[in-house]
Image 1 (tube, rainbow, N blue to C red):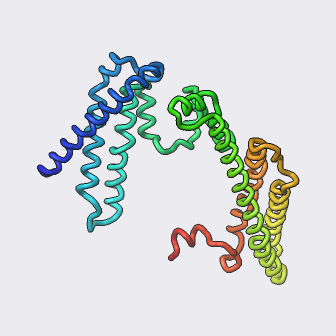
Image 2: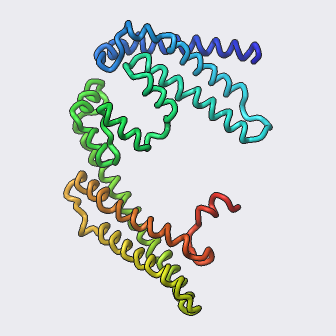
Image 3: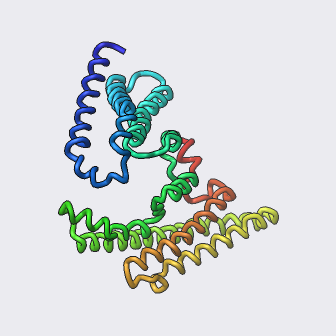
Length: 294
């Protein structure tokens, strides 16, 4: 660590810390005062204020470190680990220290946030969200209606961003886009299965029959029939006449509840079949080829 590094770290820390004070302590203070239930009392915040300073020290130091080091002519693995640590110090650790200072979050939860940050799909986080009373909107049709929720409309209106009607129009457009894109994805999945995977599987079955390999036929033929059944179910679910599309909300919910599971069923059987067909007959790139073979 040389003198220039220390000077840059100090200058950036002072600038960042003062900028944060101006934004959050002055410009947004009146807004925060209306949300006192979301933050610690000021006296409580002062008790943890050294953590706020530490967070800004870490942030500024990590930024200077990344800038100063750059990419070197050294083994890539060590550099990857180094920059991974730098990003963690730059974002995850200081961010949650700052949250802990201003929000009444149990210390144990903050530690879990730092350790498990980025793994928000894990079952533990769903349980944690429920415990905190947070909404857990797992799909687009669940989330988009919140664009026109009373609090959302009031917020956008207060700052003259969008009117209620403009929010309603965006909700409608986004829901329709979601349904249309899923329709296209489902048609594509069905087309790939029907015109590429099923013919390749049937071709392999014919080769096995010609060779008289009954045990392999008994292993593969049920999977091919299962794929054909799942394919027919997907095509039926995605048929326009079967879709509930009287409103964008109903249409998007139908696509999510019926078409997405049907696509997943086709994918699940196709993945199993991929491990059974020879490479020269499988019509699509395999993960092993894309990841490990040049």
